[in-house]
Image (tube, rainbow, N blue to C red):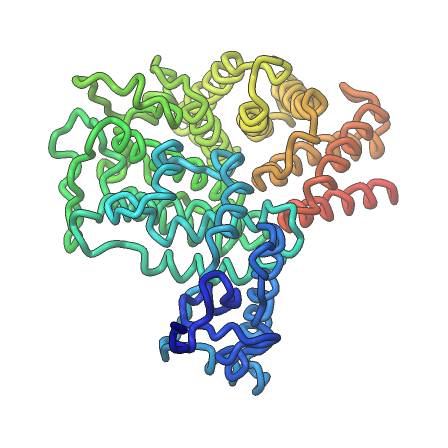
Length: 525
């Protein structure tokens, strides 16, 4: 006996648009009934035998159509089609993507996640991606942010071209990402902080520093508001919570505690680097008791399940102790990265605080701070692994290059204060600049699909050292510590390096233009 027609296509023959939106499709070709009345151009069929790549290409075409609509709302035909295709009247329409596309984006992102400031426990996060449990499933804020970075890193041009759509979704999800359910609050905060970090990095990469700094300030507010800076504090009453905020329950196990610790330090790294680069006040006052960091130095992600903090360990004044060269156990890659960022920030701040007419008491305090910073920079630089160590994984080398460079540029800023009157400081500035160039020469830049945008600022600081020396040599004819040829070679090498990464970073491209202009100005002298 034949079955009565139901108006629904046999399983597996629905068009991609209807399948994606989880609505009934009659399977008519070339355009199904529903798509013909809403958005005919979005109707695509996979014919059952299509490869994953083909499905992705078809889905990309659909998303490109939607992106065009979002970017050109004044076009009446597009606006009408978009409204007709929507099943609700809400202002925001979620960007729905298939499992295949999500997996493709995450495959692009996850191998480089730690270089973007990813602090969530990797294996737990990877497992949660396929979980159906609301207790484990990632919040939309972190998923959409990961997809955005995946699109940025994707070698598929069509996916990369959809970054605007993914950015809009990530911004929406992050703005509404905190859970009102007390049982989910702690996890939603962690995921929102992670999303803010990824968004900040994305904005910095693209030269949108004001938006990046806004994202960093959001992340700072969340980690301080959540008391992540007082984890394991010696003061049992160090954090009482802020008025009008829900208290966060204690972490469940060492891995969750580790995520909170690492969240704090990743946020601090971004804050220290970019407030120093922009010359703006820090979002974290290390000396104020309420915002003072008591949390121990972090372990690397994945380490907390094997070697978490001892149960009885308590900590206090973590950063102040470091800046006065008090011995500590902060030896992980994340810990030395945070230390290097703090030294860069403090050296920049001290440079701005210097005045030649300080009284004796001020000058004594200033010199003491200078000496402590100088010693701390040298201590870190001596314990960092060499970039030529062939036993190190490539992702570790990529991260170490940033840490090494932060230390050298911190030394440039610090000794730049006295380079005009102190030959020893002048020599140290040149040595630090040469070290930055040697670091670059020691790595294979083909192993870097992208680089932290703060490197553009650090390289420009290094170039300025050589430019200043070249100008003095040209103006006075006096011999310098380096030959004119050696200095020009160093500048040209850094510029060539910046040119590689400028293709993927508007911020580095801007720094590259400044460097080239400096070279043009020299040639005119």
